[in-house]
Every structure is written in C-alpha cells, then in structure tokens.
Image (cartoon, rainbow, N blue to C red; front, side):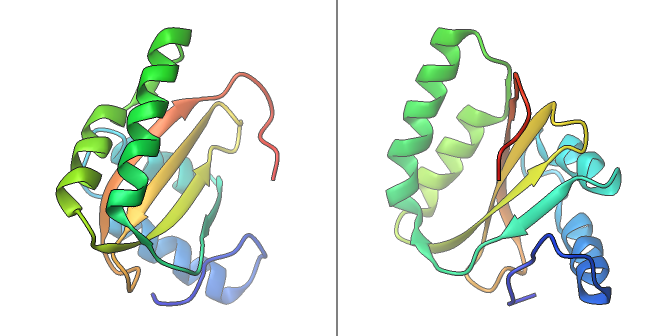
Length: 131
C-alpha cells in the first residue's frame, strides 16, 4: 500500500480502505474506534511524503497539553506521543480518518511504505470537519 489513499470513490479506494482496516489493530486504544469509523464510511487519506517521527513528537505532546487544558476528549494521544518519541528519526507517513458523523478525527502514523500502522490517536470534534 505504497500509494496515497484518497477520498475519491474507486475500486482502488475500496481496496485501500480494506487494507487500512486490516492494519488497524491494537497499537493504541484509538485504533478500534478509528477502524469502526472507517468501516462506517468515514473519509480517509494517507498523504505522500515522509516525516521523521521526532519532528512529530513535539507537535503531539503540545496537542496533548492543549486538549487537556480545553477538556477536549481524546483517545490515545499520550500513548501516540510516546510511540512517536520512541520511533526517533524513523520516517513516517501520516494519515487521517474523519468519522462519517464528524464526531471524531483520527490521526494515523504509518511506516514509510504505508504497510504498518505504528500509532493512532483520536480527538473529538466540536463541529463539521473541513477538508
């Protein structure tokens, strides 16, 4: 699954969705709800390009502090930040799943070839998701 998933309906889209569903295991407690959102028809994308995990660690630790201050519900945000820190300079691909009802957004962190999900976090949305 080395190509970017997109939100355009196609035969490839269905295959990519199925592959992503299979990759979402028990890496973090957000993976099950993310998988459920995907199965229920949520939009998803995995972007081209690689980002070193250590570049993401600071961002997701800051997001953890911000969401805690706001009282915004999250899933596995602390665990994801820890996984990113442990991955150090490993190049990662980033993905996103938006629940069909726009109640949650899930961020995915995959290996460079987009064949393994390393971590997944979710944040509750207060309004419609913009693309």
